[in-house]
Image 1 (cartoon, rainbow, N blue to C red):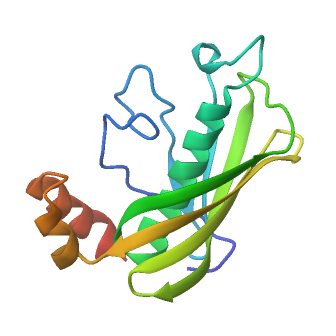
Image 2: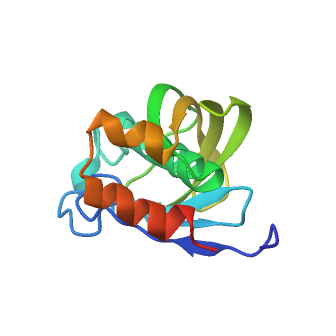
Length: 165
């Protein structure tokens, strides 16, 4: 895959607050990758506002966590857990506008550890939020014994994302 061709990433958790298409109160984020980055276009609905017409900072933090987590999952082909997040709010973000979130691996110091960076841009292309996160990476064999997601889900992720072309 060339760095300018974006390919959709399958979404397998239909109830996730960030990316679940069947979650009636969630963000319904979808993702695509060009093999070096992952991006998502998302419009934050009115019920996720802070005061007045501004997107709540917790929602922007969720978008940052989602974009970096999906970047870690897809680009490393590993299961992940977020260890920490650092969010910088650069400009107010208005509800009901299409935002573009992008994430990438900044450094991967080992098979188990990666630092990711991300950003959110408004429709004018202005950078409105910057983020960095530390993620712990797990092979299927390391993740399965943690018993934090159903076995069937692990199998589906492995088949649909990790072994997909």
